[in-house]
Length: 135
Image 1 (cartoon, helix red, strand yellow):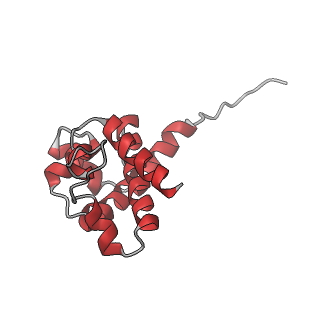
Image 2 (cartoon, one colour):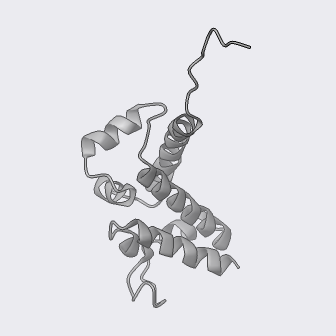
């Protein structure tokens, strides 16, 4: 059987990352508000160097985000969700990220201070810590 008409196949990965990017950024905007994050803190957490890129992505319905940014969003959404489960009172959950923490991984600093190092690994560490607390 001969194929006479080939339809271009859109990459599932590309399509998914666009959809996830828009939804992820919209969810992150809510988290940023709840955690009272400055624009500079948001940029650092997302690993974005350019303010103009950040605001461009926020304007777009489904921006195509780099895999590093998608990974960061995934960790941040997981951190938020874990806090909502561990601390059912929304205010307490949202304030936890700014409170000094005596756990060795935080060294007396807040989880937000740890996450603001700019390294994706620090988001992972905070997410892993909270997941362990959940059991």
